[in-house]
Picture 1 (cartoon, helix red, strand yellow):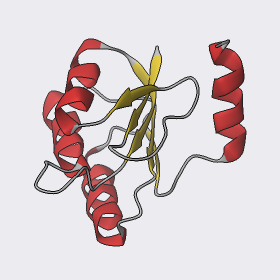
Picture 2 (picture 1 turned 30 degrees about the horizontal axis):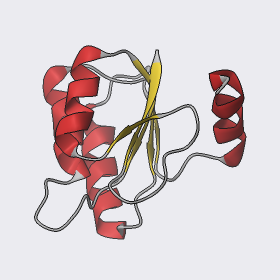
Picture 3 (picture 1 turned 60 degrees about the horizontal axis):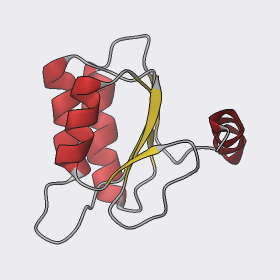
Length: 113
């Protein structure tokens, strides 16, 4: 099981697989089992947003165990959170903010890199 960090700008946390575009993230969702998925909204000028990934999760029915929304876009965060909260199965944990440092530390330690 992998952890995925969707962001075109920020540094990828240790122990995560970086997806810089919504297409890269959707491929990982389709091909891997994901524990933690952390989403940005704005992925570059004129590029599809993190909402495309959210829509793909719902359409494919392939969900990670935990979803975090680390975006700095307040409107994007609200849009993604609202859509996910209406469609997620009960076993998926949805967090409306970034990952806590304790989780980042745990995943980094487990990665052994």
